[in-house]
Structure formats: structure tokens, C-alpha cells
Image 1 (tube, rainbow, N blue to C red):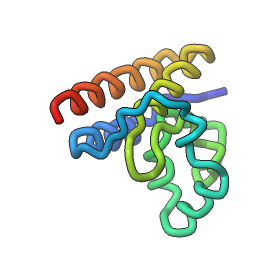
Image 2 (image 1 turned 135 degrees about the vertical axis):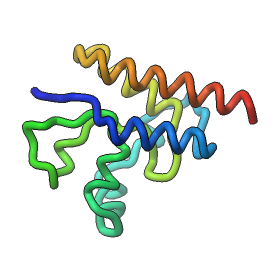
Image 3 (image 1 turned 30 degrees about the vertical axis):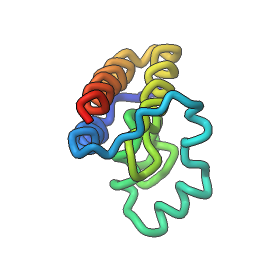
Image 4 (image 1 turned 45 degrees about the vertical axis):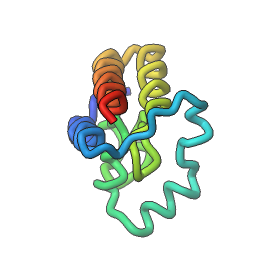
Length: 118
């Protein structure tokens, strides 16, 4: 697989964190992670480029206009979730995508810092 860091998503997540659009949750990401129906609803109203911004990884072997191209979600299309970043970091580490793991870790630290300043 040719999965790499989605730099636009990292930049977008940083901006969301800066703007305070965060959930400093430590629950189960499976409870917050948008399911297929939520993803499809989002795509009915938004372009694939917007969808892509919510995923830290990008599989360049897949078509640009496909959901399958985008991996490692970190939010619910409204806010950055701490548990989403933790899940992305853990899965990236398990799969050997150290650049995505590092990006998720840096975003998690930024989120915690922002949450502490509120």
C-alpha cells in the first residue's frame, strides 16, 4: 500500500484545534467515529476534498474521488476528537506508518494543550 500523510488534513486539524473545535474525550473512538451512513450524508453536501481533510492518511493507489483513498479519520466532520487521534496514532503505529503516527501524536498534544487553556 502506498499510504502517506495527508498534509492538508494535518493543516486542517491544526486549524480546528486552534479554533477550539475539539472534544477532549477519552472514550471509545468507535462511539464517535462516523459510520458509512454519516460519511455518505456528509458527501451528499460536501466535495470529496472536504471529506479528505478529516483523514490523516491517503492511499495514493486509490482514485482521488473515492472514499477508500482516505484513511485514519480523526473527527466527526465537526470537531477533532482526542480519541480519534489516539486511534489513528495506534493503528498507524501497528501498521508501520510512522509519519502518520507522528502527525497524530503532535495533533493530540496540541489538542490537550488547547483543552488545558480553556
